[in-house]
Image: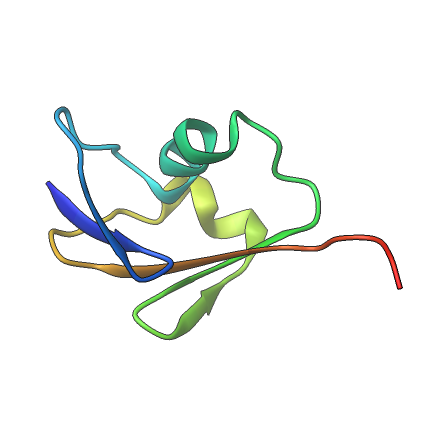
Length: 68
């Protein structure tokens, strides 16, 4: 499956079955301080496990960082 993550095209075989599964793959399971959007719609963290992905979805992952 082709997905665009943070403006970079990625191919997955097998495809992740949910947004949560994708985040485990992409972020090594470190999801604290992460926000996710699919096709310009923010997905609440409580919905990650039930949000399915479709070919060519545009996914934005934002990770909070500390500093100043």
